[in-house]
Image (cartoon, one colour):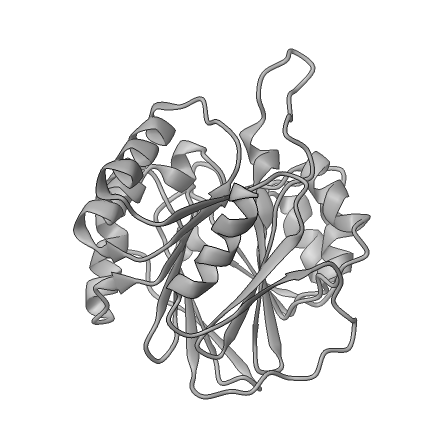
Length: 293
């Protein structure tokens, strides 16, 4: 009962929007009403994820990079004239996704946090959780195996899919944080986006068999563009026109991943070459890339 109440609290704390459980989405979706443009920035911070989504008046951040990257996210927000993060989504607790959260929480006003409900095994997770508790930031852990949660932020709809299992380990019994990833589908007007965290095959298999609509025009590639057994199958499910990998010169996107995207006619971007910015007016997407710093 506490978890259900917590999920409902998410929606009351967001100033514009609503929330409902959502099991299935039809393949053909009517466009959502559009009140303004939306920008999605996938920051160039090496092999780490930090995504900033800005509507006319609201800001959503998905992941925060490593410890030193928190300042880079703050700098980008400052450039956009944003000091409030209306929703922070942490997909999972690897250091290259949650590491920068501590700095973000301390130097920006964060109104609400969504995260997966499992216990991390790294120092960055402990630091993140301690800061959340110390600052008393509204925080919801989405239960493994729970229903999808859909909420709106201004004219943007987010559907968050939690992992099905509460235990993902390799053959040696080591916890596999990647497969705890929350996967987020975002809609703006007639356009859709999917942010796939670091999902590997166990998590991708859940998405493939879910019978839910994962089609999207823009895909943030899972697991930094690495290629796994189900990568191509997942791409067929999403059918993206644009895809971006959060990679680095040391760990570039796998050649097999690039080839699989090319087969679909999808244009591929890599953050090792600079920050990727996608602008949506609800009808058309325009994707650009800044020069690498």
